[in-house]
Length: 204
Length: 384
Image 1: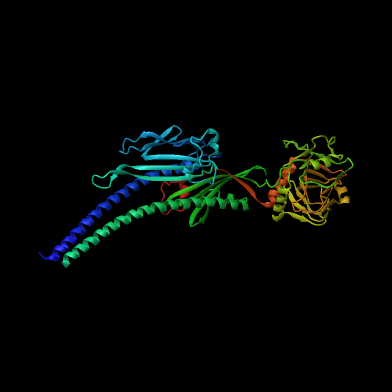
Image 2: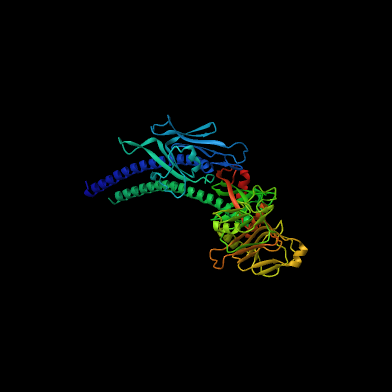
């Protein structure tokens, strides 16, 4: 056989194998990005709900609610707000809490049910939340890093609830399924994080 | 071999293109998320800024909110390239001191939905410029000589006005030394001579807030400066004024009453022209009378001041301490209505209102039945 032809087959083989390997890696990466995207969409859905609640705490039609924050704990916050500005009734009591209840529909052992309770109506959020943590600050200009321990001790005692001026919320979600890096490789869950520091206008 | 290499290269290029398109789409989706969040933040900030601009316009023109009182008549503006639409509910208090309430609805579009910010404000005259009256006669700085000529004068801390919820001491001073100078003289109040407690030391009393008040009033452009004989009105109950006496001034216009703030400044003096005064009977000023760096306060004549008289020196004053001579039939009465006239005069002069945000909320409102042709006002109508 012609030596040149053999060489070209070898080169072609190496190239094809390389392309195949790269394609597999890109496919895995694509799957990971897609999973990340899905997890982020879920985080966005939750953060949209949080955004609607937290900045509006204490809102009532003619003034602030008589009480604003009533519970301020590490994984739970309860406050009052009027949800519908046209409603003349009493403001609603809202609770956000990360429970210990596992989500049975996923294989992820770390995700928990996040609940939003409006008066007595409970909405269970089963989108793969693995962390929902809140820090409370009593003044402006402090470090934005909760690790600096400049936040109020949790649970915030009732006498300090009116001192709360800012809330720092950290939310983490993980995918329901694992992603594997290769045949026989150990899988891992895709994680996405969202953090925001709020200064609700009605508790300034 | 050439043909084989051509095939291989073509395959490589096609594969690379396929991978490239896939990666590009992923990146595009990630970028869209970031841009979406940035656009939302800009829309929200534009809606908040709209409220701030509306407050400034309301401050400049009281009736401005009434022109934009519904979604149909919303005020439209563009802030940072974002169109905003804002309308207001304006609840005006009946009396001057009754607060007005403003509810502002500010909107900016965000991908077919509406970012809505609602803020509720209390609008009151900017009246805190005037330091609270602590007594009928207030002496926040030390004085020179203090003389009383006769016993026809009166300094009263008990108000005759049923609207006043509390009485004040006839005289408040900032130091014990000033108090001693006063107690050595024969001071009179309604019902007889001064008693213990009628001259009170208030260590928080100082002239600085009054100094700042005068500076603001003089810079406002709405203080009437009087340098010679003056025959015009000295304010009315409905429209109290601020008057700065800077020279030897004689009230020659048969003025029986004045309302607001009267400032007698360095080396100035004010006398009621006797023939005119005899026609008018008594001259009464309702409000705050300030003697700033006036080297001599002569309380002779028959004026009545319902409100408070404040005598003091600015920190940079290097002249002699103010001597006070009380005589004749001067009457100084603490009145809360006089305090209100002074506050109203100051608020009207500086033309500023005090806005207190009572409560606020911000939301994304999703619009049912929105179409691409809808204007921002159309979208607002649909969420109401």
